[in-house]
Image (cartoon, rainbow over all chains, first blue to last red; front, side):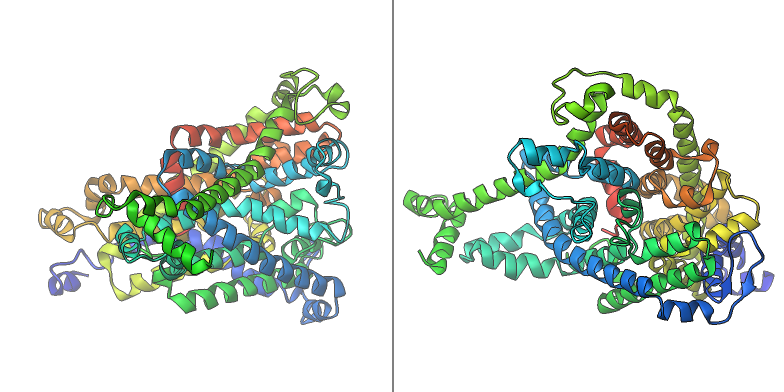
Amino acid sequence: MAEAVGRRPRRFRAWWPAWFLLPPVALFAGFVILPIVLAVLLSFCSWNGSSAIQYAGLANWRQFIHDPSALAALERTGVLVVASWLVQVPIAMALGLFAAGRQRHRALFTAIYFVPMLISAASLGILWNLLLSPINGGVTYAGTHFGLFFLNHEWLSDPNLVLGTVIVLVAWEFIPFHSLLFEAGARQIPKSIYEAAAIDGIGPYRRFFKITLPMLRHTIVTSSTLNLVGSLTVFDLIYTLTGGGPGQSTRVLALAQYLEGFESLSFGYASALALVLGVLAVIVSMLLIGVTGFGKMRSQSEGA
Amino acid sequence: MSQLQRERQDSVGQAARLPVASAGPRRARAAGMPGRLFRKGATWVLALVWLVVVGAPIYYMVVTSLEPTSVYLSANPWFPTKGVTGANYEAVFSSGIVSYFFNSVIVAGSTTILAVAVSLLAAYAIVVHGSRWTGTVFRCFMVGFAVPIQALMIPLYLAILRIGLYDSLLGLILPMAAFSLPITILVLVNFLRDVPRSLIDAMRVDGAGPLRVLIRLVLPLSWPAIATVGVFDLVSSWNNFVFPLILTQSPSQATLPLSVFNFEGNHLQNVPEIMAAVALSAVPLFVLYLFARRRLMAGLAAGLGA
């Protein structure tokens, strides 16, 4: 240690960072890294929550391949992820650009736009469950009494409709977050570019496609990454809204692994499902981060 | 009018707003009006539609929570035509929401303090030491961004069970803080990189050790970043539902989001009371939003990487 000090007099004593990093590394290793390792191990075991954990070889993975409900859950998750991306990114961008305007009345609008972010996803699921309830729920009432006939559907109990309902409500939950992201991105586009374009006589539509859209490309990638991973793993809202039902109509992968584990008590098989979910999430974020570079994705000065 | 013409006229209208061109003929401005008016109108219609889409459910939550339970099924749920009452809120209070509130305060508060404190240590070591191995540690933390907590419910349950922290608030605080580390460390590292190196060196030359430099120099300089990322940690742990769901069992250890869910399960027929519970659980963040909107939004944006 003394030698290191002698050799590098402009540095602190060489090993102080180890002491500083010990608490965070211990916390992270114990509650993030260790569970990742356990998740892999558990997927090769059988455990019912109370008995001893037993090695089960590939049994869980064999079950996964032959389990039609797991494959259906995977397919549902895919539909949810793709539809969520298609619905959320354009709306969030439009709202973000609207919010980026500095007029005072816009600030009033956006103050309300961001309110859903303050309520926990679990509470939102409960709120929407009651709103969409066929027994005098707000939406049903509006459909029958206010003449809004297009609202007259069994939004949560019709198996053909309910996944669509979930997609819309997940969008309702997440769009405020993403529009916040686009607002920040749009505010970093230098005004001078628009002024120059106006002088050159560039119309509003070309301004959007030739200036705004390209300048927001990093924001779009960031938002898409968070969006894809977010809807892949969305749990709270669906769990409190439908619990995966009716039947298995909204049983996406995140719910399937929870229900297999904590309700059916086959924690080994549930771990295999959870591992699939985790690997998918890692692949999606790695792919998108690889496209842009990590530094750019989370840069403070993106788009400038 | 062709698209091209409209665009040209629009652009004339736009140019007319600029100081340079404002001396131009008035009719140029007038010619650009229909397109501009149309776009302005469309913008406001869409803005209003979204306002209703977001505002109506929130409004509904408040109104329904004030309707008397006895008339709810026969009343108009959107307008309290049959009187308002505070009885639903009384029922929620008597169900013990205050103790869940304090559980949430303890969990979210401790999580935030723990996560920010150890992240500051980590960020300081990573930035100031700046060697290859601290860089490796930093990248290991960043791996945490890619790992969703939903995929780790079962192993976390197992780990917490085995170390004897199941059904305790500490068993919620530790994993929540651990999962907050990647974003907290990232925000603090980005901030600390901008602290002038000469200030740190000057203190060191005066004989200050690393801990002293951290407490006397870096900590006071870092308050804006700490507040921003602290708000994010606070909001996300306050609203965390997954960890209490899988890591606690007894009502005495429930936090607000879980208690609202349990309340719904126990009062299935009583919509106004459930709405009152949902509304009350959101009150603390609403208050924060009212009084510290800028700070809160900055924190949420930081958590998103904006």
